[in-house]
Length: 259
Ligand code: MG
Ligand code: MG
Image 1 (cartoon, rainbow, N blue to C red):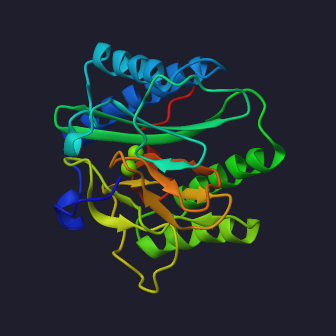
Image 2: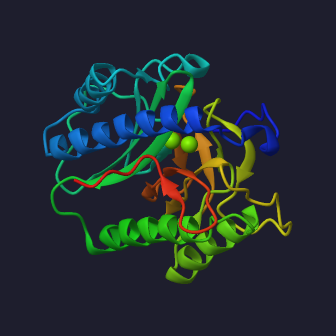
Image 3: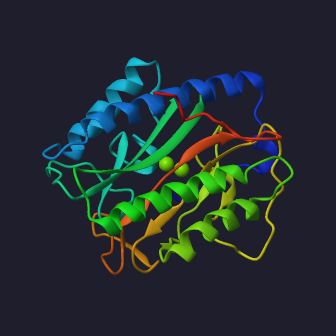
């Protein structure tokens, strides 16, 4: 999502009780992803996937964080094929060979978890398989660079150095973000070098890292519904995101749980 810059990074260092709420929210997001991952088969609609995710979050004691955010009507952003982010769930049945990006957020006691994943429906073309593999690898490269003492630009560079040499492009208009007491806060976490080192990462700071990777060119536009963001050239796009708490070493991924 497009970050709304509400707080300074220094104000987003989480307290222990806040990290506990973020872990709870993150577990619910991870559980929602596990549930939709199992349901992503040919013939399912994104409206059905939205309902599954919402049920998991609510039954686990959370609230779907995107529902009502900026007027967004659903629990999940469902973005198939050439849709990059912010797609509205609908009744259309997904077909084998397509891809679907599902972005899921949960709130527990005023604290947030936010994670997106792109799933293949049945068998997809080799170029699309590679798009998904490279985009996922770029997320993990960004996560590996997110330790206290590094700067935001180190995350951006790590992502860019996986995606662009592989021949894919990175969306510029949407970026990762600070998270914690707010869904979208400072700092912005671009998925490409900006030429500025950016803020220093500090232990206890929570951020969401979320590369959006296009098979073709980087340019995107907003569709007529006012929500869905699509690639200008119609090429397919993948989106992978985790929420993390920065430490002196490997980050704690709040939206990841072992299966
Ligand atoms: Mg997200
Ligand atoms: Mg996000």
